[in-house]
Image (cartoon, rainbow, N blue to C red; front, side, top):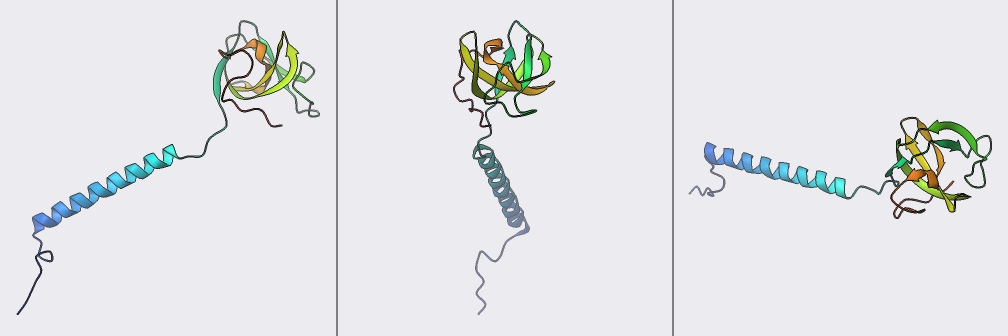
Length: 137
């Protein structure tokens, strides 16, 4: 007697359905894995959108020729950032107090990067911005 299981006999139509189901499962699994990868990626450095206030400000390099003890107006002037320029604050550091504000922002924008006094930067916060990293330099 020849016993053949029902599962080993598939019609061409059933095989096509199985392939489509397997493809759907593979796509769903791939999509879920991609979403999981995006949502579980390691945290990036802080990046806060801000702008230079109503007054142009001097962008400063506090690393060259030597590293400054803290950001201040004595750090090397790099360039002037025009009022209203959109910037990204990467981190903040305490430094020379400017009009009662001891915070300096390390910014990046299309014209370069460096320190600017927080007093001249519109962030929506007075001094420290919650969630923005403290510069570790």
